[in-house]
Image (cartoon, rainbow, N blue to C red; front, side, top):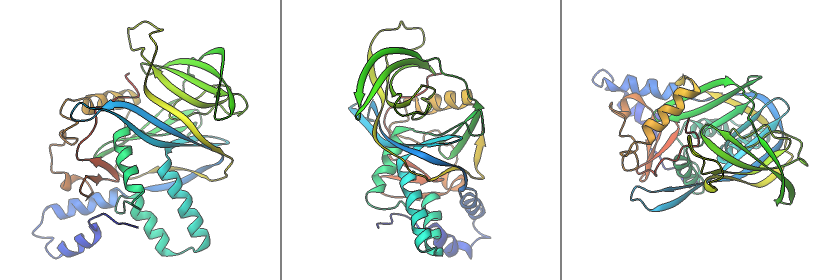
Length: 330
């Protein structure tokens, strides 16, 4: 396992003797403590679905690129959790490792990984970078009951929203298509300013789907955006800027975790969407992803760096970003 990091604890110990001379040390240590993530098991999954997520955009030089990552959907009896597959896979490794060994070392490695001190293996580091380009939040549907909880970030700040779960007005069609071996029906909806076309299977009896795409009479197996924007006419065709495609589906009983930390900032869904568009939609963002941070990051956040970016409060930030394509326009 390749550990690409500056060991923050060792650094803190090294400069601890100079604490009275360094006004920024206390702030740095406070940021490290606040960034620690706490997890609570809130349900147990019966199904685990994995999707390929793709976003069509441009890099900082205007070249067309497709950003990709894997998204995991855990379906429980009471709630669902949609989040990066990397996190799900790591949580399973920790659980199985602790069951076999129960060692303090494994628990320490888990803390380091969650808090951004350990980027993991050579395979996982590209996943961190991909997630930075994709802007995919964690979404808990029906946690708490009847609500949707979202955990998202505008580094160095981690935000949480909690809103009443509002039914999505899906329009169902008799059109069918086979996806991953399942006969699917087609449905469309407008959600946060974008029109989505989804394929769902009634053979999989759950109303769940990736991200916030739920409420159909069967699991969502594929979904992509159409060209419809606010004020435009319908029927202008598929644009495919955003696309989810099911790649695997298993019956797995695993804990569904809710996570938070002391630096989580509570806000509303409306404010978060507007703030993300204003921040990431700025023309300065692709070439300077932290242009909006006026203070010295090391004074207000826990930072670990490598050659292509840095981990800020557990969130990877690439040195150069891609043009922001928001999932939500309103």
